[in-house]
Length: 161
Image 1 (cartoon, helix red, strand yellow):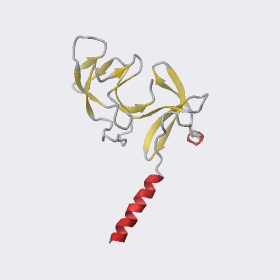
Image 2 (cartoon, helix red, strand yellow; image 1 turned 120 degrees about the horizontal axis):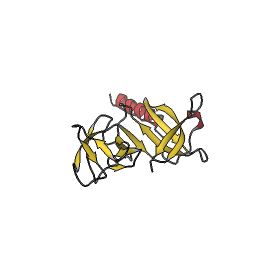
Image 3 (cartoon, rainbow, N blue to C red; image 1 turned 90 degrees about the horizontal axis):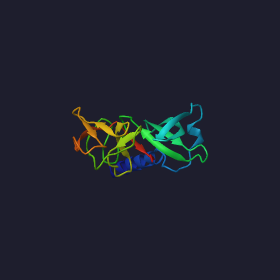
Image 4 (cartoon, rainbow, N blue to C red; image 1 turned 90 degrees about the vertical axis):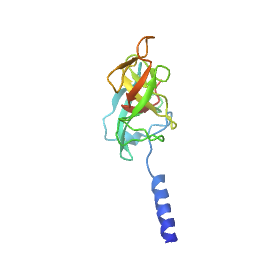
């Protein structure tokens, strides 16, 4: 019985060693990710467009962008419902937000506080107003109105400016 437990442990350890994780920001872009796929241009911050590809890694779909000149990864995004952060957060989860904890840029995404593994939960688009779970709006530009609430996670990103 003990031998079986050791064998299962080793099998799981080896399998996880071969799993393909999303790349780190600044890592060299793997050209094989582009092979046979159409490369698009993706908005990677409010004023930056980089080439990108959609790639499934360990059963989770990611958008991976890279700088054309350096072939270094600049941005990773997922809205895949199978994705989980180390904190256990996933797309569709509710998360507390406030004017103090949310970052946003006009024409771009709004983010709640970063997770322990460095992912930014995306809680809105077009930056400065976030629709909350109850339908009200958190306005990041004003001093009037709601100062906090509960938002829904729409996706997760790394590498934005």
